[in-house]
Length: 137
Image (tube, rainbow, N blue to C red; front, top):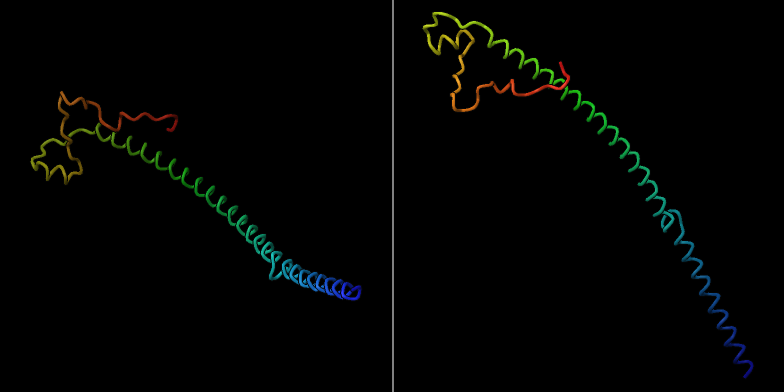
């Protein structure tokens, strides 16, 4: 009976040893830097680095675009202000006397007389003079 117990004990020890060997190989493959979780972590780390660099480049590009847009907006406001002044100065020019051509003559001379606003419409002041500028000259 002791001999059967020893054989079973040896078979159990051999089985446990074989199981440990299989687990060791699986763990080695699991932590392998090329195929296992280690490889996945390395790939993800590289992707995070790439995304960080891409994000920084996108932030810099957005900052430059914002600066360019604000510069262009400022230039547009300056041009609009100059155009308003030019239009206002056109109202100070005298009307051309003896313009018998009517609308064709006015179009040829470059001046088209705008219709007078009605008294009850509430638009006595030209539209471009209603806007106020803050600090830009």
